[in-house]
Length: 556
Ligand SMILES: Cc1ncc(COP(=O)(O)O)c(C=O)c1O
Image 1 (cartoon, rainbow, N blue to C red):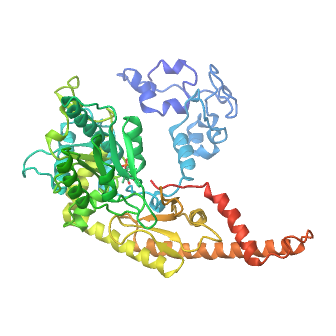
Image 2: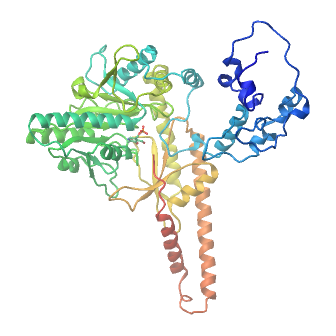
Image 3: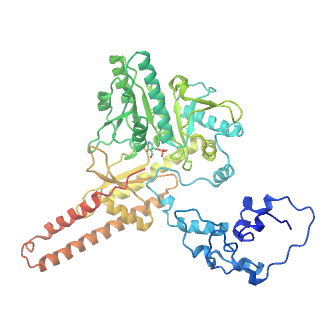
C-alpha cells in the first residue's frame, strides 16, 4: 500500500480527507507498481471515541471511531455522526475537514428552509428547464467563459445567440452579418454597459464641440428597476425621473421629452415595467424625440430596457414597434434568464451598429491565446448559461417561444379572472405586456396587501407586496409573475388559497374588533365606552396600518 505524506499528519486515516478526491493521498503519490497486502486495521483501543473534542494539532481528533472497521462503515450514518451534533461554523472556517456526505447533508438540510423556487411568484427569473439542458449546464459548469481561445465553441455559441437576438429585435444587419452585442450576467450588467457606451459617446461629442461634459443625465420613468439607480450612482450620471401618478404607472413620453436637455445621454424606456409589466410607448417616445432633436440640434438617443419584454414582444406583439425599427433606439438589453427561459445568470445587450459602441471601451487581451475583445464589467464567469441560452433558442425556435408566451398569457387571464371574481381586488396591471397580475385591495381598512402576502407564505406561495414609486406611493399592490412553469392548475390553486387567506384575515379582523369592543365596554374611565364599533374598528385598522406601513417587500 502507498505510504503518503498525509498518513503521518493529523487525522491521516480519517474519513473526511480520504474521501476528498483531490485532497487525498492517493493522488498525491505515485501509484504502486507492486501489489502488496494492505496493512492490518489498528486494534480497537487505538481509535478515539467520536465525541472527543478536537483542536488544532490533536492528531486523532477528527477520527470517526465507528468508521474504523468496514462493518462499522456500513452502519455509520451521517445523522449518527458528530458532524450533525456539533454547532456549525458561522464565522470562521473550521480547522478540520468533514466527510463530503456530511457536508452535503448539513447544507442540504439548511437549504430545505429556503422557499420553493417554483412557488416564488415574485421573480421573473426562470425556475425550470428541460433535463437535457440541465445536463448541458452541468457538463459545462467547469468552463470559464473568458477563456475564449480554450473554449472557442462556447464563444461561437455566444456569438450565435447575439446574432439571433439582434435579428429578433430587427437590428439593421444583413442576414449573414455579425451583430454587435455581448452576453452578460443579467440585464443589470447589460444596462451598465449600454449606459457607459452612451456616456462615452456623449462625452466625446461634447469634447469635440468644446462644451462641458461633467453633468450627464438620463431621463427615465420613476418606475425604473434599481439597476438604473445603481448605474447612475456608480457611474456618476444624474437620473431624471418622470413621476408616476395614480392609475398611470409608466413613463409618460411627453413628460420625458420635457426633461431632456443637452446633457441627456439617453432616454431609457422600459418594455415591461417591473411593477406592472406594462410596455412603455417607445414609438411615441421616438417620434417626440425625433422632433425635439430636430428643433434643438441635439441627437439624444433611446435605450430600451427590455429585460422582461424582449422575449415577449417579438412573439406576442410582432407588429408593435419598440425595437431597432425605430431610428433612435441605439441599444437594447434583455434578460436571458427571464423570458429567455434560462436559469439565473445570463443577459444580453445589443447595439444597433458598431458606431454606437465606442471602440475605446473594448479591451483587447491576448495572454490567453489569440486577441480577445472584451466589454464586460467582470472577467471570469461561467459558460453554462450561454450554452443554455443557445439550447433554448434552437430547441424552441420562434414557434416554441411563441407557444410558451401564449400559454403564460392564458394562465395570466385565468388568474386575473379568478381574482376579479373575488370582488376584493382592483387589477392594476394591463391585459397586455409581461404576463403578470398586479392587484391592490379594494378595501384596506381591516388588513393590507402586506398581510395577504405574509399569510400566503403559510401555503408556500411567495407573492411580493410593495408600494408604488413617487408620486403613487399610496398605492400598495401584490404582484404575481406568471412564468412558463406556473401552470393553469397552480393559477387556480393560488386563487383558492388567496380566498382562504382573505376569509382568515376577515375573521381575525372581526375577532379583534369584538375583543376591543368588550375591552372598551369594560373600561371604567367612561371616555371610550361610548365609541361605536365602527370607530373602534377604524382605530384598530389605523394601528395595523402603522405597523405594516414600514414594511416593504419590494419586487425584483
Ligand atoms: C425592467 C427591468 N430592468 C432590469 C432588471 C434587472 O435585471 P437582471 O435581474 O437581469 O439584472 C429587471 C429585473 O427585474 C427589470 O425588471
